[in-house]
Image 1 (cartoon, one colour):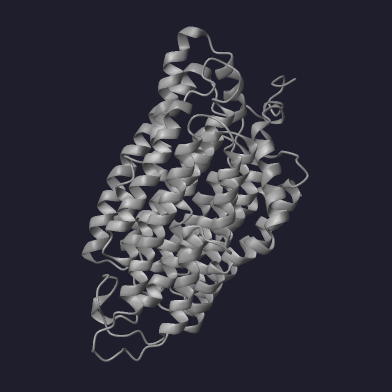
Image 2: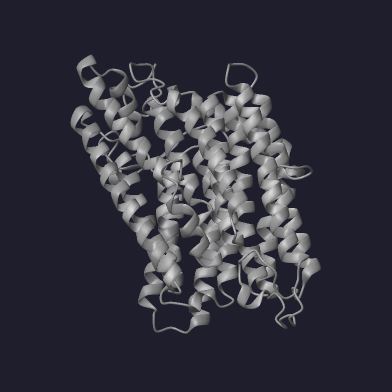
Length: 499
């Protein structure tokens, strides 16, 4: 049964490799294999989530080299939740891509599967160096997927994305090297023990390594001022790639939560070392994302800035640090990832009916299906803005209720509510321009492809499903937050490492 932990990595790895070897196979065969492998991740992730639900930490020890010496995969509730989100985004994104987006360049499905290898590996690894390795796998795949379909906008955005992430990778390797040089290990649980017990003279270097990792993860998560790559990259990518990229910023946030809760969260001189930084960064990121959304003159660019708003919101929840705040943040993380992915797909459906105007927010010919697409846009806009009866409202209410004391609580309430208002204004302006201010030109005859509509509706409907099942979902996420803050079981994974 323990071998199930490595299947979310092996399944896309073998599928991507097979697709490369089958380059001469017909496109329907490649599509069928990619679709089957992507959707097979969902029941696998659900099974792992049920296993993790008993509260036990499960290790997969590669080569039977026991920690802290061997490479390990770690399954807990948090990694299981992230695997489910990834599987849902991947399944609907590849379904959308089957209707022609995968024909814009070579090896789309192989690259898509390798991207999943990196994402799932990052969520499952219990080792810092292998977190670096999986980051590189997903980044190399994302470089190619971003450029898939070519075009000057994608090349420009891709160059920006590649350069910044190469710098980030160098800093990551430097930070990991410092930690290994001082502690002699890169196993996360073992690092937690050794960092907590480090001599005082090593504390400055350990702190420097920690802040290097914060910069790297902040770049992946698009935290201000490291966010500049995201709007151009997300707006230039093809729709299914942008939808899958909705999980990319969450990988950076996941790494911040994992590393600074476990490695730098044990009792010791570095406990809480980033607390004074996270709060202002969260509020500034949220504010910049809201201003960017208000200023956007392109529908895709608007949605990209809404991703930055969600990053700031999640970081604010992490900054609060309580179990209630963490569980609320995780609920909001699921909501924002799935709804953002659905909105990127919906934006592409809308653009396909706007002719030469494309995504520019100005008058264009009337849409071929204004009622259907308008209703979907309205539901998505209400949900992502945090209004009832959708999951965004529940997530924000839970987050604000978790902030019950402290001097910064008024700031949190003010910024969350103001950010939600800014998002509502930006989306209302975009909706009125797209659906109401049509010019006199003849509408395009093309109707939305039913399969593309199905993929889009699948992701957007997650908002209502999260409301219907809010009780059991929140119970699981509360247990996830409690497990994250209880470091004892993690430390006991290392012989002699816990009481």
